[in-house]
Image 1 (cartoon, helix red, strand yellow):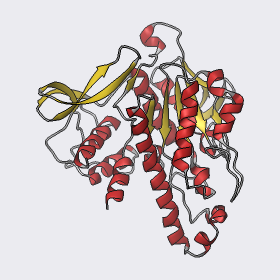
Image 2 (cartoon, one colour):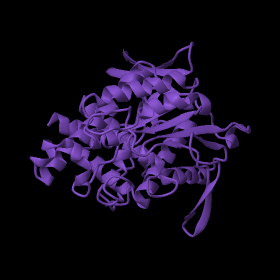
Image 3 (cartoon, helix red, strand yellow):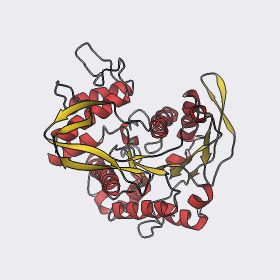
Image 4 (cartoon, helix red, strand yellow):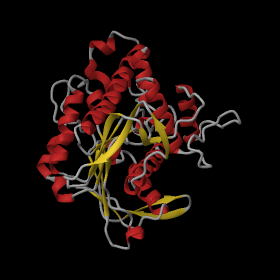
Length: 374
């Protein structure tokens, strides 16, 4: 039961963890300068935009433009400075530079089947030093699971992130995202590398096995980002898994359809917007005598780190309402944000009391659940 609870809790984490806040460039409109915010989309075929030009990246760029940003510079080893797509009856121009590689695993693997690796590609192209991204959006690992390279998958991911960090500019940040579910019944033939595990189980039972691998990997991503943050590294959690529905948003059972890519782009735009603005869940001043989280800024870096103290003082904490919330509330709110659920009068989800129900209310529920389960 504990694993189920952790998995459900982690699936609702829409924004990155807020234990560490990293200084990022703000919009040109706010600063009055020409400073660009360089964003690198990094990953496998889902980042590449398999089957459709631009994938989620075109929606990400467009949504940021709608938010008022005119200083976004998409960077990477592929694509072009300008591309177009038709959206809601209009021709939209976007920056199409990126680093997405179809079929790639976390690192080069050979055995059940050979997979080229993002790790080696980063090293061979020196792309982080060449592109100097301020924000990296990393999603990788689906092909590792497809090819039955589940053993050591988290260790490989940590090595990849550390490699990226070693080349990143000061004040830059990397978001490491979960991966979407797979419609195993639809792409059963893609899992031939599982051999007897596949053949000795019904399709339904085999799908459950793959789901366990996906859930375990996604949970490990959350734990890894928590660990690396505690080490003072500019690594944050993102949860694409929470916005892509494998029954409605996949084109072929693995890759998103246009609706799925649009959801991803809009999600990433919220993450990037919050990062640039330095937003955290709305806070309130409270007085407490229990273990609380206070923030102290170090003098040697631009990183603000969290420190746990036992003290009686005024501290800044996320809004924690009197009403008790459960995982079912988180699921309802997540479905509402995805357009799959209509709120009723009984659904009191304006947790932050800001007059609107949005992603930050979901983050507050996440904090409530985290406290309940720790």
